[in-house]
Every structure is written in C-alpha cells, then in structure tokens.
Length: 68
Image (cartoon, rainbow, N blue to C red):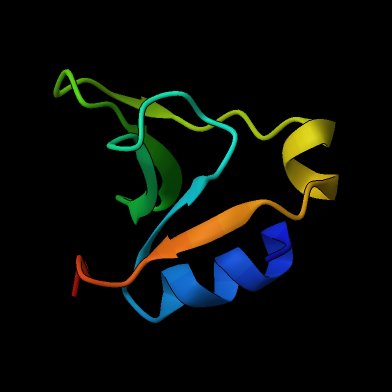
C-alpha cells in the first residue's frame, strides 16, 4: 500500500507500518495532531516522513489493532 493509502487507514483508526521495518511491533498513529511512531520499547516520537516513506509501497495495516 502507498503512503497516501496508509493515511486513509490511519483516519479510519488503524495503525500502519512499513513492511521493511525490522521490528514488526513498531507502528504509526495520528496522535495529538501529528503522526507519531510508536516503538516496541514504549517510546513514541513524531514521525519525520522521508522521501523513501512517501514514495514506498510497502506500508501495511495492522488490522487487529484499531486505535479508535
């Protein structure tokens, strides 16, 4: 899925992640007005979207974990 398609899924309350990320528990959410990446360690950071993120098509939805 593309980044744009992933943003649609986030608005539906789903978490998304890149298939190429090494830790399958890391995911992206829309939190407090910005995109944030949640790490398996419990850390949360603002997602700095790169050109690689924007133009990749390896985004996937974590369907069993809606946020809303």
